[in-house]
Structures are given as structure tokens and as C-alpha cells.
Image (cartoon, rainbow, N blue to C red; front, side):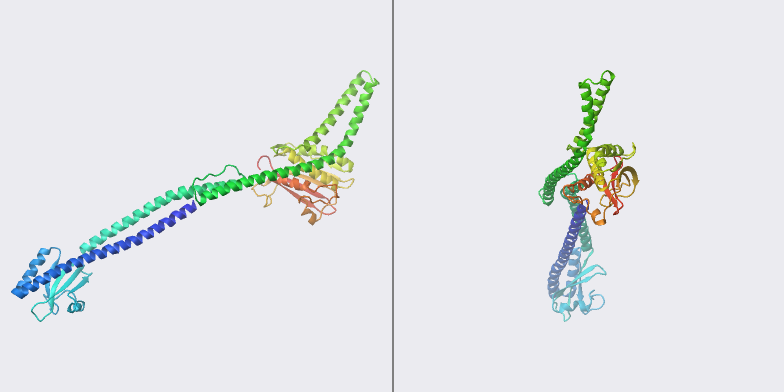
Length: 476
């Protein structure tokens, strides 16, 4: 709502300035009009009195003229009039200074303002049969002007304040409706997009820039959703391709692994068919056939489950148990390479929320790579534990406690340049045909989707340790 507040403040300040300027101009204009009215009224009365005084003076003399002026001034009510001589002192002396009355020698009317007494003096020169320059002095109080000005000023202030208040209320209503609420909804939509939620299009009915922005955001979300779907599909295809590659490696060992139980089944079945066993031995041979058949079925099922594409679904996973299943699956590869495979010890407390199939793929990739990097007689150790440490900056979040899966080998290790590129797609140090370069890249993507990361510790000639960090429990 900061933008709405700024908009309202700017509008109110603008209206206030306009109202103040307009009020001041109206105040000055009304004051000048009223002042002109006072001057015009005094001038009109002065001219009339001047003509009357001149006529009476010519006809009846000075005394009659003064009496006429006194009577006329009494009837005027608000105005006071008297006869003055410009060169007189005492009773007939004008209240204005001689310097102020100097223009009367040229002009018929002179107006002098006395702000000390709050009076306005109007002098009208009257031609009389005397060698002296005289005229009528009309005094008007400015109290009426002051009262009018005060009332006008109050009116202007109230009018300006009312205009500002109305503008503020109108700006508030329009700002909230047309700016505040739409921007709040746009901000909420942007926050959802930032968290990866591209659903729920934003509909703004207003046809302005904000409405156009909302339409563009909706279009952007549609494009991002389409790109996400395509990216997820491509990612899943890469993961499936990596699984199939691993399946090929496992199948070559599985074929040898199935040979022993098949020979046992064939031998026991032949003994039964040839009736070379009787009684309890027949039952024992049949039981051995069943056990070996179940063993082969379990191996094939594990291989098929590993290869089958599935929809990602997180659920509680016991990490040591998952690692032990992976060790059983790749045991043939380890035996062919004469590598000792050490699984983690069972621990029911080491659980996390993860997709079982995806996490199995990660651990399988890491273990197979470790076996292939380890010379004959070497050891590959898988372990799991809880560690407390801050996550790297690119992971984000505030989690400090992590469940780790460590795959440690006693191979040749890696130099710094290789460590910096192992998670690049299609990068591999293996011979042509031995690897696609997708395993570690796919594993990295899976773990990042689980809000974790993979760390590498390796020294040339001393082996490597790949450590998978996963959020503990369901606190991801």
C-alpha cells in the first residue's frame, strides 16, 4: 500500500496547494472589490456633497455651506464628513499630511488610508469663492472591511479544507480500489510465482496498465508452466535413461547371479523327475527349488522396480534400509570387481521424507561409480548419520540439521578440476561405452529437488567421499 499512500499524499498535497492558491487569490480579489466599493461609495458621496457645498457657499455663504455639510453627513450614517482647508491648522486641519494631500492641487479626489486608526479618508476638492484650497473630508471606518475580510478568509479556509478533505477521501477510495487492491493482488501473485506456484490466474477487471500487467503475468505463468512440464518430462527421460544404463550394468551381473540358483533348481528338479530321491528327500528338494525360485524372483523384481519409471512421491524413508537394498542389488558388480561392499548398520531413527525410487537411484549411481573407481581388493563403505551445519548459500532455508548418506571408496581420487565438473551432464572420466556422464548430474538434480545437496571430498591417490545431505524427517 506504499504506492497508494504516495499517490494519495501527492494528490492531497496538489489539491491543497491549488486550493490555497485559489483561496488566496479569491481572498485578495474580494478584498480589493470591497475596498473599491468603499472608495467608490465615499467618492460618490464626496462629489455630491462637494457640489452641494459649492452651490450653498456661492448662494448663502460659508456658514450655510458648513451647516449643509454637517446635516448631510449626519444623514449619511456610516460616513463622517467635514470641511477642511489644506493650509489650516487646528479645527479645519485635515487628518492627512500635506504631503499626502499634495495631489489635490491637480486631482479632484485623493484617498488616504490610516491603518493606525483603521480609517479611510477621502478628500474631494471643492471650488469656493475663497483664495484658499479646501474641500470635503470623508472618513470611513475599516472595521466593516476587516469584518468582511475575516469572514471571507474563514470561508476560503473552510472551503479549502473541505476541498482537501473531499479530495483525500476520493483519492483514498480510488487509490484503494484502482491501485492498492490490484497491486496487493499482483504482489501476492508474484510471491506465489516466486515459490513455484504457477496455478490460479489473476483476473483484474480494470482495463488499464495494472490489468495489462496482470494479463502478462498470467501469460508468463502459462509459458513457465509449459516450460516446466517440458523440463520435467526431459528430466524424467534423462533419469530413466540413466536408470536403464545402470540396469544394463546390473543385468550383466544378474545373469551370472541367476546362474547358481538356476543350476540348483535344475539339479533338484532332475532328481525328483528321475526319482532318485524318495520320501523326505523329495520334500527337501522341492523346498530348495521353491527357495531358489523365490530368490531369483526377488532379484528380478528389484531390477524391474529400479528400471520402471514412476511418478515422484515423497514418503518416510529409512535411509540405512534403502542403502542396504542398494548394496544387495549391486553386490554382483562388487564381486566381479573384487571390491568389498560395506552397507550401513540398521538404525530406525535415520529417516527422511523422500521419493524412495529417486533416492535409490541416487545411492545406486554413487555406489556403482565408487565400485568402478575402486581397484581390486578395495573397499566401498556406505554410512548414514545426522550432522548439524549450515547449508550452502545456493540451498537457502534455515535448516541446520541434516541426514547424510556417505559413499566412501578407496580408489584413485579426483583432482580439483575433475571435482568441479563431475555434476555436469555428459561429463565422464570413464572409457567410451562405460558411462553416459548422466549419473551424477541426475543425482544432483534429484537431491536438489529434495532441498538438499551433494558434497565431494577427494584427494588424488586417497579415494573419494560423496556425501548426500537431506533434510531430517519432514522438516524440509
